[in-house]
Image (cartoon, rainbow over all chains, first blue to last red; front, side, top):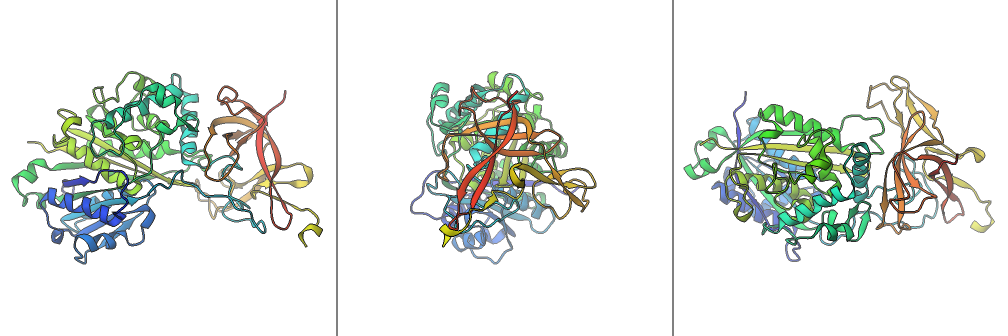
Length: 401
Length: 139
């Protein structure tokens, strides 16, 4: 068995709007803060794994131009909304493989106010079948929908049809919770609570997801520094005491499912990643003290309770109704405010959730601290217009003192 | 001149077969395991077999899930009902659900649906694109 990998530095920028900084400057702020947190200079970093969905080509190299151009290998990774998680996974893999003792993972994104993601229609001079389905025009709004709030509405809708006690109100309760949680997180893009009624009465985007049940666009970055066990022993006592063990680092893609090209199957890829992570870490869902999962839309979070085995099979409605995922509940979920309110600068998300859990395991989360947290799980999910899903799950544990 | 050309029609996607007045959907069927695909695969992602045959899909099916899209960046007319339909005898497609009010009280998973087709656009040469949706099946 290879030696353990440890998180020794973690940082994120506040998520929000940055008119005067580009993605790489945001990434540099997070990276330098994570390196300072680890008390490791950039000269000691052996591998950089970098993600930036909108400017992915040479994101890592452009980042290094702001933090130290040391000539190290740069792996620029891209996996949709799971890009940041993939960067962390790549950094962990580099250390596990013995390629380096210290690796840096950075996710950074500048989205600006792009609005609802999609493409406009324009009149064709001559219809020309293109793409895998021979489409003669943009099919959005013509042959059903491929909009993200709608994808996840359809996924939630199927779950609600299959199991009792799941409906619009349960989905809305997810958003009520995450907006409430964000009021304690100074790094969240929004820190405003909303009542259940306000969530349900907000502008409908794609039923049942209202505006307050959709993650916003925004800018931000996050970074983590991971090291080998032998490197950890050379660091200061403070860094060793604050180190967080990476007990599992798992990435999966979606396996074949009948009809999965049309009704996106986000369940199986998440379930597979969770099961592998639990087995690798030797922990179960009951051992978790907090979870940061991929609530891109409120309907998604509810389904992930089930796919991550946080509730009984089919029991996600009861789980939210019981208050279990609230910060004072049995298993706090998204105490950061989640993507719904902390924000979702795409590539930063899967690194920021590792920062969040690490901060709680260190006991350094301030007003939003989950007391006594020892084990946490992070989850991100990424996909594209024609499906093709990625899940990344990390299980992190506080160092045994 | 475009106006002088006879109006021709083209399906909005290649898996819609217009077929002289009897429009239906068609899939590629894996000869090895029977899996159905609306697009042409090099090999089957389920069994890795690489022989496929063309299969006509049923015009009727059951609504698996729906959403009602109220905000669209494409200029599409909103609100509209979009669904996932499990076709009788196999095949899963996404499509508009038409002939229903865009209201969650008027649509329900499990409802029986039938294929319908209609014009969805015209190009600069006057060719009409034919799209499809599903409407409640009449008894």
